[in-house]
Length: 69
Image (cartoon, rainbow, N blue to C red; front, side, top):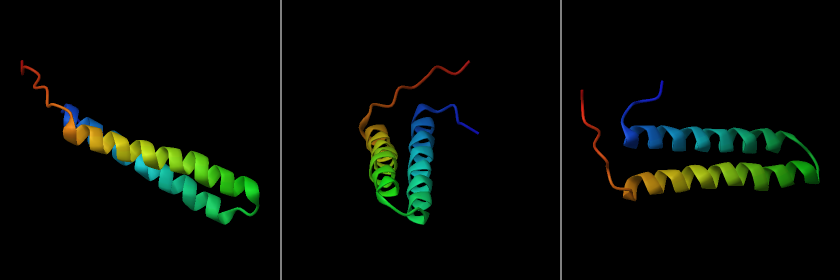
């Protein structure tokens, strides 16, 4: 369940991207041949890098407080 806090939401998104990247890379290790390696490097690496960058961005971005109603 996604949180309502902007920081927690960004951290959850980065965690989801990291997990998806690791799952893709783990599935590609089961495959044989050059296509599995290309998917491993491109799709898995892209998801893993995106998750890391979202995590780092969430740490340095300013925290915007939303007014509570």
